[in-house]
Amino acid sequence: MGKIRPFREWVVKVAQQCNLACDHCYVYELQDTSWRHKPAVIAEGSAERLAERIAEHARAHALPQLRVVLHGGEPLLAGKRRIEHVVSVLRSALQGVSDGDISLQCNGTLLDPEWLDLFRRYGVSVGVSLDGDRTANDRHRRSRSGRSSYTAVLKGLELLRRPENRAPYSGLLCTVDIRNDPVAVYEELLAHEPPMIDFLLPHSTWEHPPPGHGTAPTPYADWLLAVFERWYTAPVRETGIRRFENIMERSLRGRFAPTPVEPVEPVVTDFIVVESDLSVELPDSLKAAYDGAAATGMNLLDHDFDTVARDPSVVTARGAGAAPLAAECLDCPVVRLCGGGLRAHRYSARNGFDNPSVFCADLRRLTTHIQDRVLADVVKLSGSAS
Image 1 (cartoon, rainbow, N blue to C red):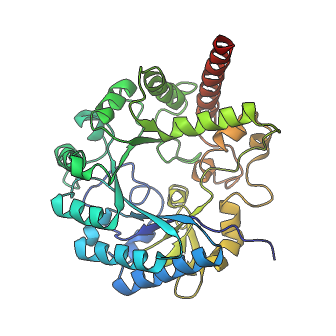
Image 2: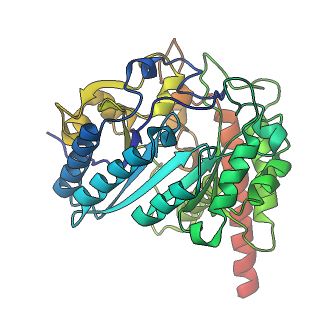
Image 3: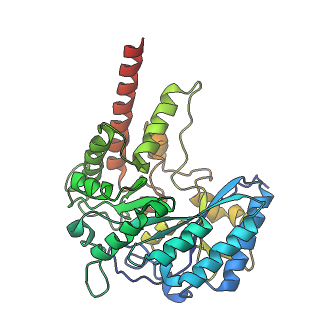
């Protein structure tokens, strides 16, 4: 039996429902319907079982650090008492075993001073989803009645920006809509003083391509590169942008490594999802592909995480199988920069996941531009230093 590659991150669905009806949400609005059959919130006994299983895995693999992300739906709908119980049992189980980074990703509309007090007490970091200014955000992030969520999100962000709450504030998550002005979106996000920004491509497949696909050669790369130039050329670094920083780090590692660098593995390899009923699922972005695409058939009542990690479907989804990427991806000169993109974005009914990403052209242009830009600046600086 081969060596197990342990999980290092868990996404826990503490609440299945949401108080918004975002039309680009992969949980409710795309292909999967499994959320309908799961408990609305995670039970206290389930939280205890989860904590035991994570600690067991961390102990078995001597993990010095791990990360748990509380997610949904909207995780704050689980309520303060339930969230406090989840966090407290996780902290207790991991004490003396591993340094647990616990975070929560929410839409920001339900944040209040009591929530922030709870997060400070337990060392929980908080990320908020925001797509830009009122017009940009309200293209997608509205309530079920169609009402704007923007004002409520801003109130939550105002709380996070207070000095006493800066430590829990981890950053903003923005889903790209190419109809929105990229620099205006970035400036709006920057106004909320995030430590980090994550720009996400809308979850799409070859069966359901992203908006604007085919209208221009690389519309999503063009959008992101406008943000990159604004961010990269600023006199001071105003915030982190994870996507850009990852590409820059890989570009420099590939250029200056003492030995040739092997192609990086596909994106998203080290996390697993636990649903509110303790069923274990593959990365939830796969729910954009087809109904049941993320299911493994395993649960934490009957299976430990080593068993999950050995399962062939999990091994393949993590990119550890014999052919983790399509042949044309493996032959691509920029695969070490993009990793082939998200597995979900490669899906087609004809070939399954044995395709390049539906964003392939965008990823090639984005990564190549950033690589060339950064390496040219390094060469320039090296020349001036000598």
